[in-house]
Amino acid sequence: MRQLLTYDLMESMRVTNQWMGASARALCSYPQLGLSANPFIQLTAAWGEVTERSFARMAAKPDWGISSIPGDDGRDHVVTIETVMERPFGDLIRFDVQGREPTGRKILLVAPMSGHYATLLRKTVKSLLPDCDVYITDWHNARDIPVSEGKFDIEDYTHYLVDFMREMGPDTNVIAVCQPAPLALAATAYLAEEDPKAQPRTLTLIGGPIDPDAAATDVTDFGRRVTMGSLEKFVIQRVGFKYAGAGRLVYPGIQQLASFMAMNAETHAKAFTDQVVAVSKGEASDHDKHNIFYDEYLAVMDMTAEFYLSTVERIFKNREIAKNIFVVDGKQVDIGKITSVAVKTVEGGKDDISAPGQCVAALDMLTGLPDEKKANYIEPEAGHYGIFAGKSWRNNIRPLVLEFIDANSGDEKHAKPHAPRLVEDDPVENVAV
Image (cartoon, rainbow, N blue to C red; front, side):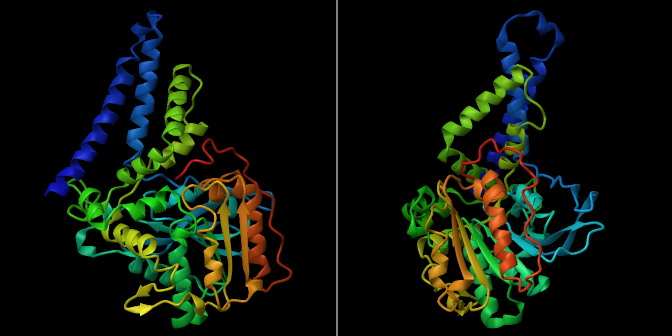
């Protein structure tokens, strides 16, 4: 009961802050107050607008917002989202580009389950859609999943990836971003032994903690310092009465968000202060850089307690993937069994979540894979966000990943990757997410 009441208390605090922002915005927007020359009124209204929007976003799942893409034929092609596999804790969805022939590049984007929705990879999807057939793992918010659906830990997550890869077939190119990188590697090794014909063609691991001890960060240090008992006691809550998953033990997304924001508190505080000033001057807009970024960044989802705790204990503390002792259903998954899947790792030189060295560690574990099927790339000036959704991704990393996919496609006539088509700037490219 204590955990359930604490969850509802957190939700009450969020709603209260949202209400305070809405009230301040409404009260300070009366026309009569325009007679006053006191700038405090405009600033208070602006503070209310930014605050209301910020806390409202924490409870809403963002839309993909991808309605069409330009084609090589000079026409815009409508994009629809199709559910390929529907599962309790996450779906496999496809971005279907209407009126376009298959591109020859079938890509499975494995989205992180680390507190944000899969829409965090919206820009990644947009950049790949003109040249690829894109599928993505769309993980569900644990607060909306009834307790009757059972548990979901990292072994269940691995099984989901295995099922998704089997569904898509052996011509699939997997790109795993951040948190799922070690489990995507494990799922590929699982298939290598259990169902070799279902293995993907290539596997690209972007900024993932394959070996957290290879280059320590605040994230890995936290996993070392805090005991599992402390985590269970202080961060695990039961979903409150408001949601379908009432009673389910979860790691709340709001707590994860608070942890991430604390790592770059000054950057975020300045961004919000600057936005309040911009709103008060009438210089902000509904889709300016700040709102585009924070509408996504602040939209958080809960993780099941067993997934969060098993990730901390088995990936970060025990380093089961790094030591090649990861077990699924009582059977060890041997990374060395991967002998035919080309593997590329991508790291950011300024990544303070998964520092350089953590992801490339995967290549040394692939003892059965020829060197010509291994590749690594470090983007010197990119932070964590930039290596999968920022300018560094669009201008430098994306073309290299597509070249790697084409080089291992077995089709020498495959077209070269197109130049980047989306060149919008990212306001917080090097912020930890």
